[in-house]
Amino acid sequence: MLSGFRGLGVTLRGALRSKVTSEYPKEHLPLDNRFMGFPALTWDVPRDEPYCTGCMVCVRYCPTQCMSAKMQDNEKFSEGVSHRKKIIESFEINLGRCILCGICVDVCNFDAIEMSLEHERSERLRNANRVDLPTLLDMGRVYQVEVDWKQSKPNAASPNERAIAKAAAEEAKTAEESVAETSDPDDSVTTPEETGEDAA
Amino acid sequence: MTENVAPTNLGSTIIQVPSPEPGTVDMMVNMGPQHPATHGVFRMELRVDGEQIQDLVPHIGYLHRGSEKLCEHESYSQIITLFDRLDYVSNFNNELVIVSAVEKLMDVAPPPRAELIRIIMCEFNRIASHLLFYGTFAIDMGAITPLLYNFRDREKIQALFESVSGARMMHNYFRVGGVKEDVADEFESRSLALCDELEHGIDETDRLLTENEIFLERTSGIGVISGEDALDWGLSGPVLRASGVPYDVRVDEPYSRYDELDFGIPVGSAGDCWDRFYVRILEARESVSIIRQAIALMEPGDTMSKIRRIARPPAGEVYAHCENPRGDLGVYIVSEGGERPYRLKVRPPSFCNLQALRDLTVGHYIADAVVILGTLDIVLGEVDR
Image (cartoon, rainbow over all chains, first blue to last red; front, side, top):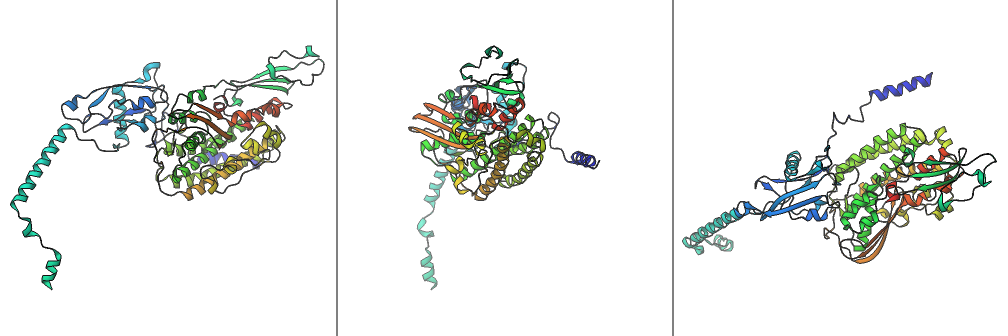
């Protein structure tokens, strides 16, 4: 009898306790920013192009060979707008093969690939998980906004920017020279010792 | 009497057992590979006389993926992902073995902070693995409640893993010469809080199971193996320590920074199923204490030594082994220089512990076979590789 009541007490305590589980499709547990979802390609907003240059280093180091990439000449470089001589033409990741190890992110030299928070991909067709460049870039854009992504080092200057910088530097140099010509440095130089002696 | 024995296809491993009573016939019972108690795809052929097991032949290989051969085609950084998948409930411990083997070959030492992070992760993983063991072991005997309790706690550990490595399993977090990235700022306080919760969880399991009358009936005196026999079979880990042999790689051949930490090695006396269970309870408590000590030792610093990102060890041979939750996991690498090994051999504790299954089981009942297999705590990913 007594043990029966004790048992009911346990049940009651269990009923009043906060929930340990969450009902998955309705509620989602919060994801950590480090969470490794499927890889995605990042988008360089100031240059308005992908970071990826198609250097293939991730393709070489992928343990499951789930990626393929193709490089092309960057038109924006010839226009002088971008610093990237080469740019990605096509990129495919078979997300069905991807094991989410993050090695591609590790080896990338350009911050071009990141493990996004995307993890709920289920498709009806076997090949529907082979995602192409636009999809990867979309996933990347979402990810960049979600985690407030920052690139590890700033972009190099593009040819146009370099030209502008060079012109600016030359202008500054000529201005300096003109300043140097007009003013005589000897007049303005007074050493502290001299002033000190004068005061004494 | 031979006509009384049912035809068997036990192969060369068949042994002579006392012939059955006149009029009775030994029966072949097939257990697995889809049996829930085998914890994976493991098949046993039992020859039973009534309910008593006369002979047992394990069949393995259902999960064979050729990991060792695959390692010959992968660079060292890629091999870490394969090691994650050997013993898939103690991934960090597996990573530590391959990483320390390559470090030994290259003669580099990871920074002290990285070593401590590794130790903390491995010990958390040991607790997670043991929690899984208590739960599944209790289920093998018909008790479902402990599993729910233990999975609740294991979930917290995996959430911590996610905040550190980005993955709940298959972390790929350890690198040759350090770890992938430093832990987050709140890691230390979070781990300490988790330690308290885990201690509570382990106590709960202890209260639920250890002294339980039915549990004792099912486990004590079942599947006894003496320390001597255990050593002869090459057992290791909790299975060996339950038989009274205080062998632990962390103490006998300290690796990483285990020599700076103070912890005990729980040792059983009888070598039965109950001892193998209780040694794991005590071991999980020791792991909690190790984590607390390691966190106290943590100092800010680098987490990756200054070496090439792609490991390229010199030609040579190396053997490194570490204490896994299941025992002594070793890896032997033959390198010809370059990015990938010439040959890689794994010494899996689960596989070696499984060898004793037949000796432990013969003479017991079918229901005990499940319990004995449960206490060996095999992971088929490691047995079959």
